[in-house]
Length: 174
Image (cartoon, rainbow, N blue to C red):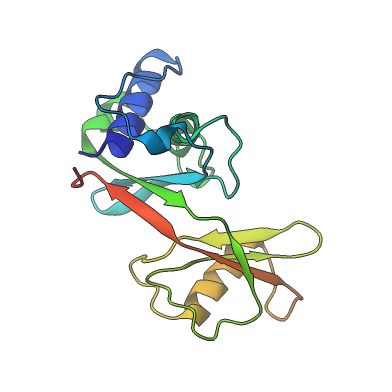
């Protein structure tokens, strides 16, 4: 298990069991943990999404704190799912996606859904985000449609597009 997923796992397990947010010690902490970066923490159970929360811009002092807060939120505050229970903890699989800085694009031409995430936003502040390389998302148009749905944005509305890449850390990573 990578240091990224171990941090997310240890944090969420501690929070679900005690109600306390504690930054657990990490063996051989990556240097990147000290940098100010954004990330998403995704949780799956039986191969199905069970929670996913992240930030497009870093809000905490460093990546370590960003992972900690997003892990707790993914497990307890994702509005699509009930909070994870103590009984579920052994069944949860974790991944942490560290995001690059988003870059504006003017079209989806050349957009690779396997390598690039998408952010769609309106002038009034509605937005939808989708990470890259997700099962069942095979075209830029599918990625765009999901972002529109997530953001409550109607097709045909004027939108801004941004793309980003991720460094994905799963439980099988070392």
